[in-house]
Length: 206
Image (cartoon, rainbow, N blue to C red; front, side):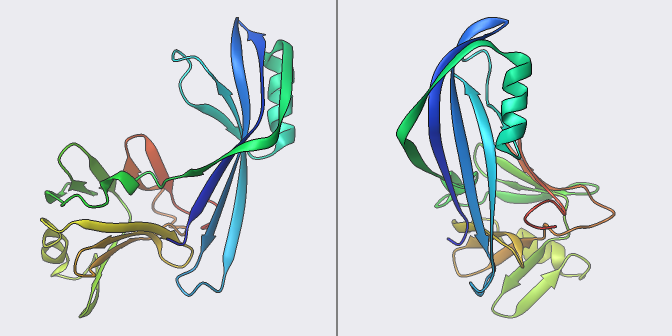
Protein backbone atom coordinates (compact mmCIF):
# COMPACT_ATOMS: atom_id res chain seq x y z
CA UNK A 1 0.00 0.00 0.00
CA UNK A 2 1.59 3.24 -1.16
CA UNK A 3 -1.10 5.65 0.04
CA UNK A 4 -1.11 6.29 3.79
CA UNK A 5 -3.55 8.42 5.78
CA UNK A 6 -3.27 9.33 9.46
CA UNK A 7 -5.71 11.22 11.67
CA UNK A 8 -4.55 13.00 14.82
CA UNK A 9 -7.05 14.42 17.29
CA UNK A 10 -5.24 17.47 18.66
CA UNK A 11 -7.83 19.09 20.93
CA UNK A 12 -11.18 18.48 22.61
CA UNK A 13 -13.70 20.78 24.18
CA UNK A 14 -17.22 22.17 23.99
CA UNK A 15 -18.97 25.23 22.65
CA UNK A 16 -22.27 26.68 21.52
CA UNK A 17 -23.40 26.69 17.86
CA UNK A 18 -27.20 26.86 17.96
CA UNK A 19 -26.82 24.13 20.59
CA UNK A 20 -24.03 23.13 22.95
CA UNK A 21 -21.80 20.46 21.45
CA UNK A 22 -18.71 18.49 22.38
CA UNK A 23 -16.15 19.04 19.63
CA UNK A 24 -12.79 17.74 18.48
CA UNK A 25 -10.09 19.27 16.33
CA UNK A 26 -8.29 16.78 14.11
CA UNK A 27 -5.64 16.85 11.40
CA UNK A 28 -5.62 14.39 8.49
CA UNK A 29 -2.21 13.78 6.89
CA UNK A 30 -2.27 11.78 3.65
CA UNK A 31 0.78 10.82 1.62
CA UNK A 32 0.76 9.44 -1.92
CA UNK A 33 3.64 8.01 -3.95
CA UNK A 34 4.03 7.01 -7.57
CA UNK A 35 4.28 3.36 -8.62
CA UNK A 36 8.09 3.50 -8.64
CA UNK A 37 8.24 5.02 -5.15
CA UNK A 38 10.41 7.89 -6.38
CA UNK A 39 7.89 10.73 -6.03
CA UNK A 40 5.69 11.59 -3.06
CA UNK A 41 3.18 14.24 -2.15
CA UNK A 42 1.62 14.97 1.23
CA UNK A 43 -1.57 16.94 1.90
CA UNK A 44 -3.08 18.06 5.19
CA UNK A 45 -6.72 18.69 6.01
CA UNK A 46 -7.93 20.30 9.20
CA UNK A 47 -11.17 18.99 10.64
CA UNK A 48 -13.80 20.06 13.12
CA UNK A 49 -15.80 17.11 14.46
CA UNK A 50 -19.03 17.53 16.40
CA UNK A 51 -19.77 14.54 18.61
CA UNK A 52 -23.49 14.36 17.96
CA UNK A 53 -25.21 11.74 15.76
CA UNK A 54 -27.51 14.45 14.39
CA UNK A 55 -24.48 16.33 12.98
CA UNK A 56 -22.76 13.63 10.89
CA UNK A 57 -19.30 13.83 9.44
CA UNK A 58 -16.64 16.47 9.86
CA UNK A 59 -16.11 19.93 8.43
CA UNK A 60 -12.78 19.93 6.61
CA UNK A 61 -10.57 22.91 5.80
CA UNK A 62 -7.41 23.33 3.74
CA UNK A 63 -5.65 25.35 6.45
CA UNK A 64 -5.87 25.76 10.20
CA UNK A 65 -6.52 29.48 9.60
CA UNK A 66 -9.67 28.66 7.63
CA UNK A 67 -10.83 26.36 10.42
CA UNK A 68 -10.19 28.97 13.09
CA UNK A 69 -12.07 31.58 11.05
CA UNK A 70 -15.08 29.26 10.81
CA UNK A 71 -14.97 28.55 14.55
CA UNK A 72 -14.79 32.29 15.26
CA UNK A 73 -17.85 32.99 13.10
CA UNK A 74 -19.92 30.05 14.29
CA UNK A 75 -19.18 29.21 17.92
CA UNK A 76 -19.56 31.07 21.18
CA UNK A 77 -18.13 30.09 24.53
CA UNK A 78 -15.82 27.52 22.93
CA UNK A 79 -13.24 26.03 25.25
CA UNK A 80 -10.61 23.61 23.96
CA UNK A 81 -8.03 21.46 25.71
CA UNK A 82 -4.94 20.47 23.73
CA UNK A 83 -4.11 16.77 23.76
CA UNK A 84 -0.45 16.01 24.38
CA UNK A 85 0.32 13.71 22.73
CA UNK A 86 -2.43 13.82 20.09
CA UNK A 87 -4.56 10.72 19.59
CA UNK A 88 -3.19 9.09 16.43
CA UNK A 89 -5.07 6.66 14.18
CA UNK A 90 -4.29 5.09 10.82
CA UNK A 91 -7.20 5.61 8.43
CA UNK A 92 -8.08 2.78 6.05
CA UNK A 93 -8.80 3.43 2.39
CA UNK A 94 -12.57 3.81 1.71
CA UNK A 95 -12.53 0.58 -0.33
CA UNK A 96 -10.31 -1.40 2.04
CA UNK A 97 -13.16 -3.41 3.58
CA UNK A 98 -13.96 -4.84 0.12
CA UNK A 99 -10.56 -6.56 -0.04
CA UNK A 100 -11.10 -10.32 -0.02
CA UNK A 101 -14.60 -10.08 -1.46
CA UNK A 102 -15.33 -11.45 -4.95
CA UNK A 103 -16.72 -9.03 -7.49
CA UNK A 104 -20.27 -10.01 -8.49
CA UNK A 105 -20.45 -8.18 -11.83
CA UNK A 106 -19.45 -5.21 -13.95
CA UNK A 107 -22.54 -3.42 -15.30
CA UNK A 108 -22.40 -0.86 -18.10
CA UNK A 109 -24.60 2.24 -18.13
CA UNK A 110 -24.76 5.07 -20.69
CA UNK A 111 -21.71 7.02 -19.54
CA UNK A 112 -20.29 4.97 -16.67
CA UNK A 113 -19.96 1.45 -15.33
CA UNK A 114 -20.60 -0.12 -11.96
CA UNK A 115 -18.54 -2.69 -10.12
CA UNK A 116 -20.97 -4.64 -7.96
CA UNK A 117 -20.22 -6.51 -4.76
CA UNK A 118 -22.85 -8.15 -2.54
CA UNK A 119 -23.93 -4.98 -0.76
CA UNK A 120 -21.76 -2.32 -2.40
CA UNK A 121 -21.09 -0.71 -5.75
CA UNK A 122 -18.36 1.51 -7.16
CA UNK A 123 -19.46 3.83 -9.97
CA UNK A 124 -16.73 4.77 -12.47
CA UNK A 125 -17.00 7.57 -15.03
CA UNK A 126 -13.29 7.89 -15.81
CA UNK A 127 -11.64 6.20 -18.80
CA UNK A 128 -10.35 3.23 -16.90
CA UNK A 129 -7.84 0.65 -18.11
CA UNK A 130 -7.71 -3.09 -17.41
CA UNK A 131 -4.15 -4.39 -16.99
CA UNK A 132 -3.08 -8.01 -17.01
CA UNK A 133 -0.17 -10.14 -18.20
CA UNK A 134 -1.02 -9.41 -21.84
CA UNK A 135 -0.94 -5.62 -21.43
CA UNK A 136 -3.35 -2.73 -20.92
CA UNK A 137 -6.83 -2.62 -22.47
CA UNK A 138 -8.16 0.93 -22.65
CA UNK A 139 -11.79 2.02 -22.70
CA UNK A 140 -11.76 2.61 -26.47
CA UNK A 141 -10.59 -0.93 -27.35
CA UNK A 142 -13.29 -3.21 -28.82
CA UNK A 143 -12.48 -5.92 -26.27
CA UNK A 144 -12.68 -3.52 -23.29
CA UNK A 145 -16.22 -4.55 -22.18
CA UNK A 146 -15.17 -8.20 -22.21
CA UNK A 147 -11.99 -7.53 -20.21
CA UNK A 148 -13.99 -5.58 -17.65
CA UNK A 149 -16.69 -8.25 -17.42
CA UNK A 150 -14.01 -10.90 -16.83
CA UNK A 151 -13.28 -9.28 -13.46
CA UNK A 152 -16.49 -10.86 -12.15
CA UNK A 153 -15.88 -13.64 -9.60
CA UNK A 154 -12.33 -12.40 -8.93
CA UNK A 155 -11.57 -11.31 -5.39
CA UNK A 156 -10.39 -7.79 -4.75
CA UNK A 157 -6.83 -8.34 -3.53
CA UNK A 158 -5.80 -4.73 -2.87
CA UNK A 159 -6.59 -1.07 -3.43
CA UNK A 160 -4.27 1.91 -3.69
CA UNK A 161 -3.94 5.44 -5.06
CA UNK A 162 -0.78 6.17 -7.06
CA UNK A 163 0.28 9.56 -8.36
CA UNK A 164 1.01 8.26 -11.85
CA UNK A 165 -1.92 5.82 -12.16
CA UNK A 166 -4.79 7.10 -10.01
CA UNK A 167 -7.12 4.73 -8.16
CA UNK A 168 -5.82 1.18 -8.62
CA UNK A 169 -7.84 -1.95 -7.84
CA UNK A 170 -5.89 -5.22 -7.87
CA UNK A 171 -7.73 -8.51 -8.27
CA UNK A 172 -6.61 -12.10 -7.68
CA UNK A 173 -4.39 -13.30 -10.48
CA UNK A 174 -2.74 -9.89 -10.78
CA UNK A 175 -5.31 -8.19 -12.99
CA UNK A 176 -5.55 -4.48 -12.21
CA UNK A 177 -8.08 -1.76 -12.94
CA UNK A 178 -6.59 1.73 -13.22
CA UNK A 179 -9.03 4.62 -12.74
CA UNK A 180 -7.16 7.80 -13.78
CA UNK A 181 -7.59 10.83 -11.51
CA UNK A 182 -5.56 13.38 -13.47
CA UNK A 183 -7.32 16.31 -15.10
CA UNK A 184 -9.84 15.54 -17.84
CA UNK A 185 -11.59 18.65 -19.22
CA UNK A 186 -14.60 16.58 -20.25
CA UNK A 187 -15.00 14.96 -16.83
CA UNK A 188 -15.45 16.19 -13.28
CA UNK A 189 -16.10 13.05 -11.22
CA UNK A 190 -13.93 10.00 -11.85
CA UNK A 191 -15.55 7.58 -9.40
CA UNK A 192 -17.96 7.43 -6.47
CA UNK A 193 -18.50 4.97 -3.65
CA UNK A 194 -20.94 5.34 -0.74
CA UNK A 195 -20.67 9.12 -0.67
CA UNK A 196 -16.90 9.19 -1.25
CA UNK A 197 -16.09 10.97 -4.52
CA UNK A 198 -12.86 10.91 -6.49
CA UNK A 199 -12.71 14.04 -8.64
CA UNK A 200 -10.38 14.55 -11.57
CA UNK A 201 -7.55 17.04 -11.47
CA UNK A 202 -7.73 17.77 -7.75
CA UNK A 203 -4.69 17.59 -5.43
CA UNK A 204 -2.57 15.53 -5.42
CA UNK A 205 -3.55 14.61 -8.99
CA UNK A 206 -3.56 18.17 -10.35
